[in-house]
Image (cartoon, rainbow, N blue to C red; front, side):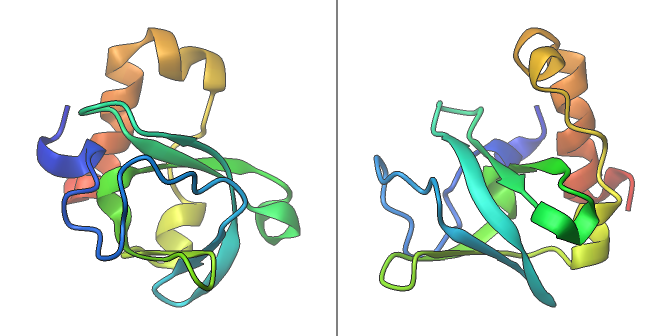
Length: 116
């Protein structure tokens, strides 16, 4: 795992136990989709975002460390990545994500700056 990339420690407004499913997701430069799935496991927290037509309905995985603010009143999650960074992220494969730690590490490396 890559440091704090898989935890919500730096996310302003994040409340442990809050369900973020259905929240709107905003990148640093605009709307990217909505939270389809939300996981809060210790050292393995992440969001799966449905991008809708923006990148042809692709789902993307965002480690919790990319979240910088949660606005529960507006039901919006703000991430500290640009739309292009999200669009160019590794392909999300829900089956490999759960069973392959090296696959998950690929995302941690990408979002922590290793592949940007």
